[in-house]
Length: 427
Image 1: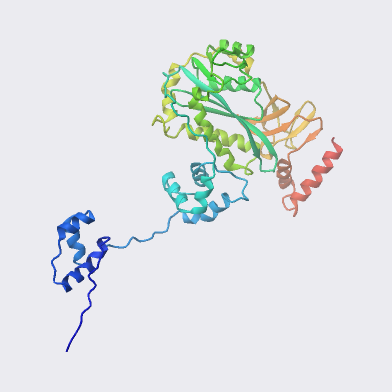
Image 2 (image 1 turned 45 degrees about the horizontal axis):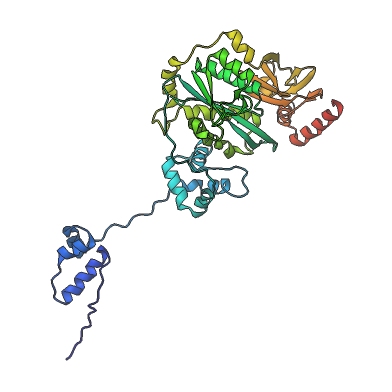
C-alpha cells in the first residue's frame, strides 16, 4: 500500500499564536525547533516561546460594558444638532453630566469614552480653538502684588423663557494664588466695573499692588501701544488712587501679558452648556457657583488649590480705604418690602418677584435703565425700567396663580390671558 502525506512546509510565523501549529509541522518533519531564534525574532523570552509551543492559550479579554453607556442617549441628545446647548470642551460635558445626570467617572475615563464613539468624537473635532502662541514666557508674581482684570464679553444667551440676552462676565484674578471673582452683568459700564472691583476688594479683604488690564474703554481713554504709554481714564485713575493700586495696561494686541486671566475665559464657556435651561437670575447664581467650584479645584498650572493659596496671599494685600470712599463707588441699593401680590414698588410702578419672598425685605439696585432685585446678596429678579404701572414676569405670575388657584386645570392659559388684560389696563 502506498500512502502519500502532503505536508505544507511553507509556514510563516507572525505571532505567538502561530507557534502550536508550527510545532505540529516540525514534528511531522521530525525537525528540531530553534527556540532561541524564535524568541529573538518575536522579541520575547525563550520561556514564553516554550509555553506557547506547549499549547498555552491566553485568556480572551472580556468586553465589559462601560458604566457611561447608560448615559449614551442623554449625551446623544445634548450633542445633537437640535440641542440649544453647546459644549466647547469634553470637560464641560463631563461636568454638566456630573452636576445634572449623576455621572460617576473620572474626566480621563469620560474623554476616552467619547473618543471611542465616532459621532461623539466628531462633535468635538469640529470645535475651533485659537492656537497657543509660541514663545510665551511664563512668569509668576509674589503674593499680593498683582491682579488681572478682564471681561468675557457679549455672550449671547437664551433664557429658559426663550428670551435672547447679551451678557458679560467680569473677572478679577489674583496672580499668585489664582483666586478668582466673577460677576455677571448685561452692562459693561464704568459704574458696574467700579462697583464690582469695590465689592471684590472687600471680599478679598484688601487690594493688590497693581492691576493688569487690557485697553477697555472704561479704563483707558487712549490705548497703550509699543510707542505710547496710553492715557488712563480720569475717573478710573482716581479710583486707583483712592484704593492705592497702580494700573498696568497691556500693549494693545498682546493679551498674553494677562495670560492667567485669559485662561479663565475658556472656563466660562461652560455657560453655553446651559443655553435655554436657566432664567437670568439662575444664570447669575450659576456663574457664582462656577467661580466657587474653580476656586476649590486643583489648578493645573500651579498644582495647588486657589482657596488655600488665597488664605496665604490675603495677608499681603494692601489695606482697604475707608468705608466712605468705598461707598462712593458702590452702586447704591434701597431696601423695600414685597407686598401681598409679590410685587415691589419703584417710582410708583410695581415689579414682580418670586412668590416665596412675599412679606420679606429685598434690596433694589438701579443702573443702565435696569432694575435688579436681591435677597441676601442673591439676585432674585430683574426688570427693565418701565413706565407701566404693573410689570410681571410670566413665571412669577404663574407661581402666584398656583398658590391662589392650585386646582385650576389650565394655569398657563389663564396666566397668559390675565397678563394680557393687565397689560391693556395698566399701560
